[in-house]
Amino acid sequence: YMARLFGIDLGLSLLWVILAVGILFYLQYEPQKPFAPVCADLFFSGGTIWTGTDQKAEAVSVKGKHILSVGSYEEVYKTYCPDTTVMVPLKGKMLTPGWIDTHVHGLLGGMDLLSVQLFDCDSFQMMSDRVEAFIQTMAPGEWLVGSGWNQERFLGDEAGILPDRHLIDKVSPNNPVWLCRMDQHQCLANTIALQMANVDLRNPPEVAGGLFQMGDDGLVTGIVKDSAMAVIVQAIPTPSEAKLQQGLQTAMDYFVSQGVTSVNQVVNDIFTDLQKGWDTFEQLYEATEPGRANFDGTRSLYATPYVRTYFAPALALYRDAARLYETKKHLDHNFLRLGAVKGFLDGSLGSYTAKMHEPYLDNIQGGPANNTGMYLTSEEDLYEWIKAADGLGLQVCVHAIGSKAVETLLDTYERIMNEVPKEGRRFRIEHCQHVEPDDIPRLSKLGIIASVQPYHMIDDAIFIERALGKDRFSGAYPFKTLLELGTVLSFGSDWNVAPASPILGIHAAVTRKYQDMEGNWHQFYPPECITVEQGLHAYTTAAAYAEKSEDIKGQITKDYLADLVVIDQVITEINPDDIPKTNVDLTLIDGQIVYKSDSMHIIEPPRW
Image 1 (cartoon, rainbow, N blue to C red):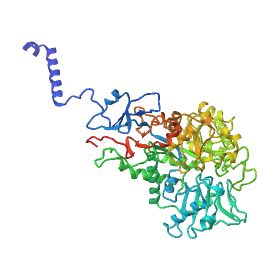
Image 2: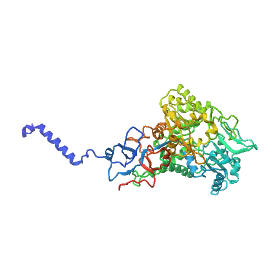
Image 3: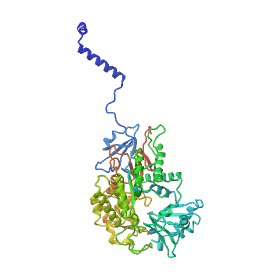
Image 4: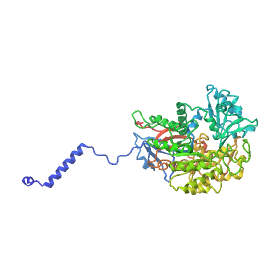
């Protein structure tokens, strides 16, 4: 009626009302700018970028904790904002995904870096002198705990000969001393350490899977092997919390200097039980968390080093590990998580305790006649523990070095897989150093991961012919054959047994070259050499798969975690013999710089 009265069209009136309301909203709220660019935090270009995938890249950018863009320079440059983005000119260097070490003893290694250094000792006298000097820094009665000696690196008539307690007694009459061989499978105790552990020098305890070596005089020599080492370890006082934190942070600093951004921490170290060991890692993570932020709470460009840690307690403690796993689900699992357990089946080649099919050829270490090594875990316990841990959803990783141990472990894995078919379990063989020809194809057939440490080959090659003979070379460290058969091959170091250096690990796997004590170069069984690309994959994509994290790291891909490494040589193009000359220049974890060499130049805008 009103519309007719005033001659106004009702539909047109409603339209004007809607337009008026729209104008009011427009005036009140500023419209969003279309296609606003996302500004990267870091921009990499000007070098070789190895992504770990088939994608070729000229540039990479990072936003927050993740990879933002990967591709051509023009494409990635769209994310560069001069006022906020940090420019990282590679200048011919090489950018790769952060390296993952799938087998370390982090806390033990960190504590070792704070102790006496024995890795380069080439004689009893040098070893004794090092111990004497370090004892001078300690209080009377304080335990000296360390490792690193290797009798195979002693010169002259001492080559291959084990030291004894008298060597240390002379320089440490008042301090108990416990010094492990570099492989951690036999250790040297001085007399006072044996006494404090209540070891009868004439009648030491008999321990399954271990032994106290006896001398010609009918007394303990001080050499203690494998499971028997627990007799001494239980007498060693637990270090203070402050000392443990110092040791672990020292390890973290060392890892990032080598380009390692993630580790698999296998088995608790001798200084702690399961709960204490986990607490040490958790407390350090909490302590370093403030170092990842600025005073105003925003993320900083630099961060206190803390590498991502996949925690794997002892297989025998699978029940405790499962309970701990359930109670720690609130943590940032990208940094610290528990999901695996690690067992021991045999010893090591250097201690002549790796379980072989045939006896060792010499008896230089004074072992039993026709020694074939030893099992550290019975086959019955091995089967029961693996099946139970697997049933609780834990990933199982088991140490097996000798050919007989590898065969036994494969048999056990296969039995359980047949009894309880299941997807996604990813059983691992740790070390997998000596494999019978018929057993090599079984790994790929069963989907077993070979978690190996290439640098062990360098240490073993010095004496392997004496210990095993050339007839057994073809099954030793069969990296190329395993890859050709489709086995997932992941690399690690076993640090502190060997250097946690992927650069040295890749060189070992690619060249299989080593130096004898006179400095001469030799090559161990060249048919098993692999390529540099295969070595890089073993430290990145394959390593991520081995720890069940391949969907978030191990490659330079959009939305993956921004864990990156810059090295000063393009190792895929240089002479492989020159790989050890390569240096790590920059390490990023979570998009933050945790290590930078003096030679690495970056351009920081005012924001940072």
